[in-house]
Amino acid sequence: MNIILLGPPGAGKGTQAQILVDGRDMIQLSTGDMLREARTSGTEMGLKVAAIMDAGELVTDEIVIGLIREKLQGPSGGGFIFDGFPRTLAQADALADLLADVGQGLDAVIEMRVNDDVLVERVVNRAAEAVAAGKTPRADDNAESMKTRLMEYYKKTSPLIGYYYAKGDLKSVDGLGTIDEVKSEIAAILG
Ligand code: AMP
Image 1 (tube, rainbow, N blue to C red):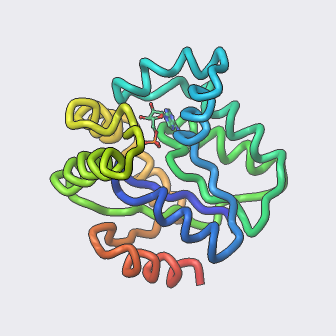
Image 2 (image 1 turned 135 degrees about the vertical axis):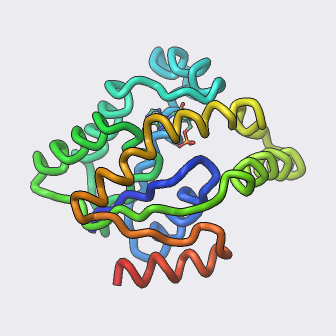
């Protein structure tokens, strides 16, 4: 089973992806995590995207599609969870092609619905919690970058909701519920 978790930054995609990894042996493909890893290891690509990520803008389709292409050649476990990808229509089309190339398809696109005030609050809290735990918060988890991230989401990513609806793949869950409530809603969709 291959699914996309779709929603704005702070909607809880990563949290629910982790639950599916633990419970269903699925494989989380988070382009955000892959890009952060590339930065930490100091690869040429990592250095190239650092400033773009910190500002809250999207990196090029070419880079993220390349990252996903590589992962789809690897083990597929209980299926892939695409978390933070696709974020543009070009990425969505590329994903359909890449899945077809490995003889697979998409089973569901799960939209996590939230409201924008809660998102900003969650992301600012996520940074504060990281600091309290002695960790370095994400450089883009601040109110300023969050404004750009939300704008990028509404301009470039939210059209995917209509796109997947029209394809008949879209399901929605209430992302404002507790982690357990959202988990149950997703479980009901996946069966
Ligand atoms: P995330 O962890 O998913 O919030 O991603 C963090 C940042 O990585 C984003 O704000 C973008 O700069 C970049 N990024 C992650 N995934 C993508 C993607 N699919 N397309 C373009 N940029 C991305």
